[in-house]
Length: 154
Image (cartoon, rainbow, N blue to C red; front, side, top):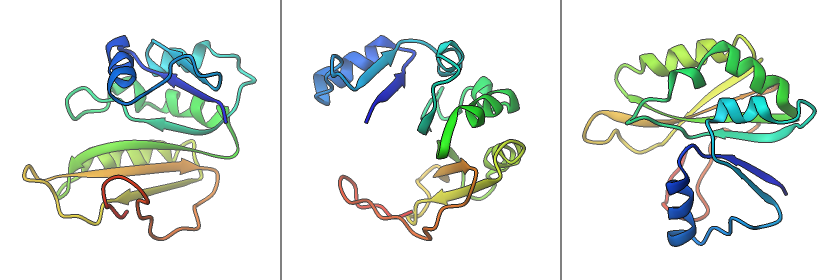
């Protein structure tokens, strides 16, 4: 498996090396220290991805240029057959307006858009973590549980 990581801040990569045992010289790993949208645009157009995971935040907000129709269209065109885009979203559990807007925008370029949320309650701020999956077809799963790390179910 080959991985391409777009990480804007080299200090984040360094923290992963020092505290999470990341080997930045691994043969299957390519790290691009630039914005995800710029990195995707700079890569060879024939390159396809099985999974693209978006986990970019400024405080709790996803940067605006990563939730546009233009970016989603480029992502959709770069996915392999059966590939999907997963994006981490934090929003208010009682009124997730950003989440709804993101889903509406994704549906313009992806036939299947699913929202997964943790089965836990909201945190003390009322926020909930959602994973939004966008692809050519829906998943077959109805529940996902973590096998390692924090005991979570989606």
